[in-house]
Image 1: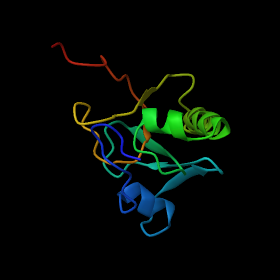
Image 2 (image 1 turned 180 degrees about the horizontal axis):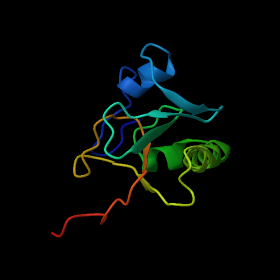
Image 3 (image 1 turned 90 degrees about the vertical axis):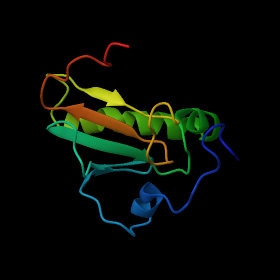
Image 4 (image 1 turned 45 degrees about the horizontal axis):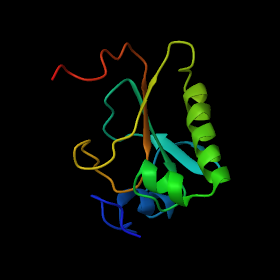
Length: 126
């Protein structure tokens, strides 16, 4: 099903290929709902990606199309990865880019986890 502004899910996107084992990743955690791995171009001392194991393009697509247990399992995995990385006490940021205005680069819903230093303000002044 097409997602407004994003099109239809592309099975050849890099995260789909990682999930199929065609491209290696530096894995942090995996369960039935999600795969977490280190970003290859980190923007903070700790920069992980968490991707659902389902073919969804955006959060809206994921929330509307994935079973409730998959949505819950995915977000539990995000929290678990932050804990595994030792980020609970000092704090961390999660971010998900969706669509052109947010500069989404991979058309597979995913969450970034940033930490390891003070991260500064959320957005630059407009």
